[in-house]
Image 1 (cartoon, rainbow, N blue to C red):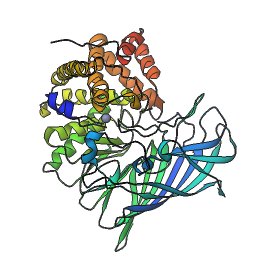
Image 2: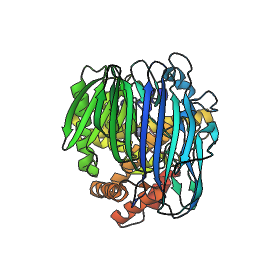
Image 3: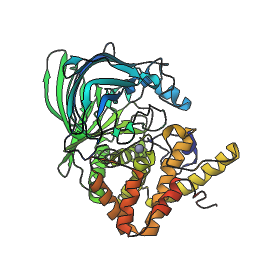
Image 4: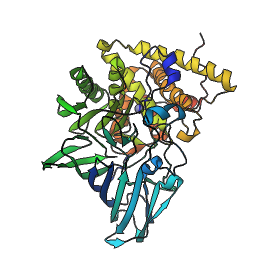
Length: 490
Ligand SMILES: [Zn+2]
């Protein structure tokens, strides 16, 4: 994600924007989703069938699913946005939504499911027998959705309707730990999932266009409704956006079809060109984009943008070169989060810091935007120092660690400055120390080794140690644990 932050906006010379997995599976779980959206009531009826494969080394007799839409419910204890973003998220006043599970079948038999966890955002599905490593089980979940009037991942706004994190998705099972069940937070992107195959059928008003993860296989239409059948292979999530205001233009980045959906962009061709150049640039730097299509979607969204596999949301409130900046940032997430996954709740730095640094690399290669690498790195240093001074003055002391869970950052500026800003400085310092050739070689190796898997901080460090032929723990952990405090004092 790229977040917008007032603190950062006041101090940053650069665009004042902040944004905001898969085991190597011999076999992949498969999700089939049927969804019928009623735009008048902002509700949907849906069915999900998961052909779930146990890729762990353990047997278990229940499967846990995240129900992220319940973070948007009236009963939810936390908020989906920080207090500072409340009005931007809910311009028409607070609005609620959620997901209701009506039935669960396991291998065709009714199963006594339970809603658990904070905000009832976990679905526990008991299995009738142990599921052993390598075994599969078929789970059918009937559910309905109510979308809030919210400029957020899940919700409808003035211009578009965002369906993201909208269906039950299996929690990642970690050997020795069990299912990873961290709940939704307003900070960051609190998601963690394995790559799976998706077949999705969405029915919606015929006046709408759909932008989606994956490839549209076919669309049928009658006077009132359209049905799109979509296929997305080896992706860690699936999202779509509907709007009756969408225009669509397309181009190719090599073999990758790049679609741009927009309703308010006087320079749409240029925005599409940025997305196309970003796919080409990151493919060259890190490794080829493995999917055949990529959708950049302008929509109503509280932050600058948001990433999903093969689809990124770009907020319609972002203007000028900042808009290109958000496109470049969200597109970099296709590599870091999308293809190489990670636990975004507990190790947000792993995709977010690397994505923000990759964005600096994009602008280094593309001087036509007038944002130089030097500007970005020196700007990050002065901004981070200002953040330290300001926060020290207010709070007395400050935690500068990066590898914290999302709910361990007290405030949004603390999260943004330690993950995005400090992330750029860390990678720039790394480049100074190991050289450009080793840096790119290690990032390419990391991409290749962990494509369609979930990586950890230890995995990342190990790849760098292999490529540099020396211990790198000292470097990374001094940054991640917050031991490198002052970058430079002016
Ligand atoms: Zn991001």
